[in-house]
Structure formats: C-alpha cells, structure tokens
Image 1 (cartoon, protein in one colour):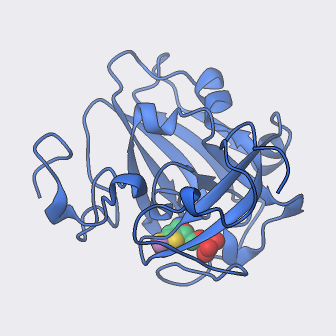
Image 2 (cartoon, rainbow, N blue to C red; image 1 turned 180 degrees about the horizontal axis):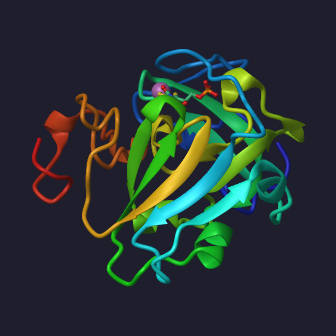
Length: 212
Ligand SMILES: Nc1nc2c(c(=O)[nH]1)N[C@H]1C(S)=C(S)[C@@H](COP(=O)(O)O)O[C@H]1N2
Ligand SMILES: [Mo]
C-alpha cells in the first residue's frame, strides 16, 4: 500500500477505484495495434508540428533534437478499449505542454490530429491533448520503449482510451475544426473517455464529434 500517488490519488496497485467501468486488470504488457511494426530510420525520422501554428510555420525536430528536449515522467494507467487495463506504469518523455510551448497553436485551434507511421492518426480536443499528464513517451519505467510498444515516440493520454495514444508518432497537426482519426472513422468514439465508457461512435451525443 503506502502513500497515495500525488497525481492519481490512488493507493496501491489494482485498487478497485482506479479501474474504469468494464475494464479488467492485465498483467504484463501485451502489444496491441493495427498493421506492422515500422522500422525506425533515424536519418529520415523527424517530428513535425504543422497546420495552424501561431507563427504559420512548421516546426521540426530531428531524433537527436527530440531526444534532447526536457524529460519528465508521469505515472499513469493504460486502458485499452478491448477491456484490459495496465496499471501503474511510469511514462518518461516530453510533455505535450512542453511541445505546445515550443510550437504554440494559433488562437483558433480547437483540436489536434496526432499522426504516426503508416498514416495512423488520432484526433483529440486541444484541451485533452494539452492535459498536464499527456506525454510523448520515449521510456517506460526508465527503459527505452521497444519497437512493438512505439519506439522512438508514442503518445500517452492517461485520461482517454489508449487508441488516442498513437505509437510511432511522427507529427501533430493543429486544427481549427474537428476531424476523425483512424479508429474514430471506424466505429470508435470521438472523445473516448474510459470513465464514461465512451467506446463506440454510436454512443456519441450531439456535439461529441463531426458527422459520420
Ligand atoms: N500507430 C498506432 N498506435 C497505436 C495503435 C495502432 O494501431 N497504431 N493502437 C492503439 C491501441 S488500441 C492501444 S490499446 C495501444 C496499445 O499500446 P501497447 O501495444 O504498447 O500496449 O496503442 C495504441 N496506439
Ligand atoms: Mo486498444
């Protein structure tokens, strides 16, 4: 047991209150994604912030530059919409708030699209993306991510289902209107809050997302 974690307010691993409705605890760390694992090519890799930036310019980081950005850690669970949850991982990397400060969005930006290798994408409301626990993770529990788990960079948004956190991230597009990402176009909920069990698009209420 011990002291409650200052970020989650939860004590101990597997405490019942920390599990969103309909989820079960998964031991270990399964690999879950659509399609093949991309090969990392450092010389071709760049992390791009584009779309409606405040200065109208694209912002790019090489892998070396990205790895040199301020490193912070977040303690967070991972909730897959297929109903398993992984509890108590420490994610290390670059906070989305750091990136937003380095490449500020224009005032009209309301949503972002996070883009990954092979065209995988996930849309997020700017406020969800900017959450102070959202992190572009390069490490888990102090170790570099493996290729299957998203090396070199994956997004973790602790308060949303894990499909909202692309592995193998390559960029962020700032948007002045909402647009559906990969799974959001294919039957999954536009917002994806596990605590409200927003799993599927048929559960969406007016205002939750663009017309399907
Ligand atoms: N690029 C990419 N990222 C992705 C996915 C995917 O299909 N492609 N699947 C998501 C889903 S549904 C989950 S549950 C988590 C799983 O992360 P893990 O394999 O590291 O456990 O990755 C997310 N990120
Ligand atoms: Mo998932």
